[in-house]
Length: 304
Image (cartoon, rainbow, N blue to C red; front, side, top):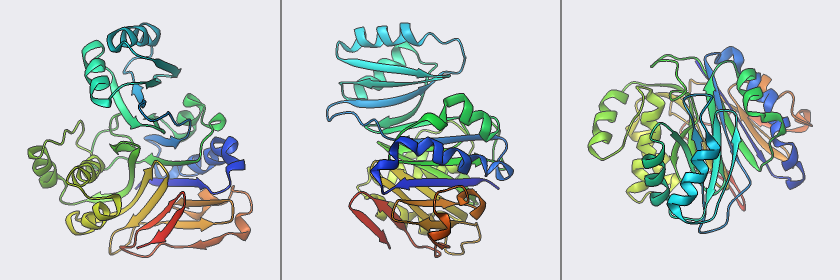
């Protein structure tokens, strides 16, 4: 059992309050996931030709200042960065592949949590309130965010096993449920060149979506293929550069609720996580249909 929450702001005037609005939503899911928690927030977008990475250190005393200087010298290009607890966000004017190679050379101990132009993934072990405080969630700004609280069932409690999982540039996945065919799929995807760091079934779902996107699917096509190829019970929330998507398996036994006003769209595993939102009493509230993809993005809203 895990908890999922998401918030997409339709009203740009609220973007300065995104973290403040989202923090109580994440912490409301503590009962569904006290082992670890995390979130993917979108905002502070870099220009074309730049790449933005969230890096996570395995120790609290990692020297980010020295690393950033070494990375800038290695790449010989413009670079900006800031530290957030045990993580750092690096913005660099360079190709993603070249940046990845440089990071692997200079600091192979670092974990790359996310890559894109907008996304930042921050996660770790501990109660949701501890993760919120560790990374200063309440003070964060942005356009949309998805989060997860984990109660481990398929694998160990680790930072790597916590959600969200990156599935590509500015894409990520959080998951409530369990997949029955993840062991077989993991082996098949490994043969296709997909790398895994944990035994987590959600990482298999993330790897599957990464593979489908590599095969030329768009996000909608990849998720519809997932309905055919992923066995089990699940609710997925997927973060994109421009918004987020929600989909449930054909049986839809894992809980999910959606709420929409003129100012925002919110989703959660339980209604209590939505109760703190402004004007929630005036929202349209409903349960997403089985095997139906709901997407909210800039200039695009649909169910398919």
